[in-house]
Length: 338
Image 1 (cartoon, rainbow, N blue to C red):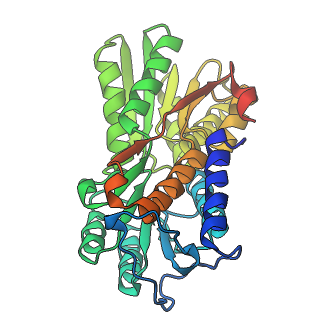
Image 2 (cartoon, one colour):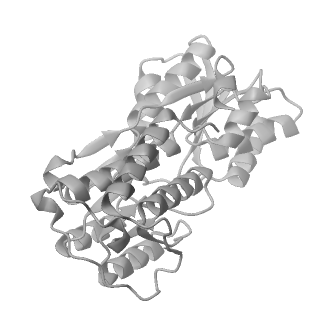
């Protein structure tokens, strides 16, 4: 997928910062959180300064939710590339969507005394504890892509607004089916912030459109295979107008199920969220009807921009949230995203 202009702008800013502070071109990217920590330079970022920052002396830790989901992989690739340009050392560990593992890995980062932690939480409730622990240790944390209840203890949030995504996607479906029909919903893992808010967005639109009936709503946990199996079961018992999915990987599974039953996606519309490459390709092929682009490139670029702003200008200059807008992709504009 084409990277957005914002990535180019931040890349230019990053390159400028490296030249100004004498950062190296080569960075270390280390996967295991258990590896020995390195001593890092003390930085009084909260005071604010215009002095050049030696990024090569900084160690940044990145904790994705996993390294299998396409969105998380893109975030990881972009963050790795941009911190490498700065000359930072980036530590990355894969919790494999296990909140207990993620908490342990982030606690290891805290014990190592890294300069900043970037985290895309596996679970909003379970992972909040490490935000508190990082704050107590004096380590700033940027929460990426999934909000937490104790977000006020983090430096800030960078990502999209999931309630808006739910409202936008369900309104699109309602309009496409003419305000009346039967839909089924594939949810993300129950309890995850993105699932809660996307579902709430769905509910807001559905409550105002009572001629749209929800046949069933099940958690497929962001997984293609699970979504395919659930959709196959639905198609054996009812006729659906749409399958509304809280992410694209589940939408891809729903498409496979529909086609496997010999049905057309013109008859059973499938929509998703994230704008991953496989979803864009599916829309271009005439299978998926639409997705909402959660621009991982833009999220990663803004995260690095905020990180640099913190080290160069101080904590007082950082806003609590940086919201990246959603972009609807369907047959009308899919060519722009291939």
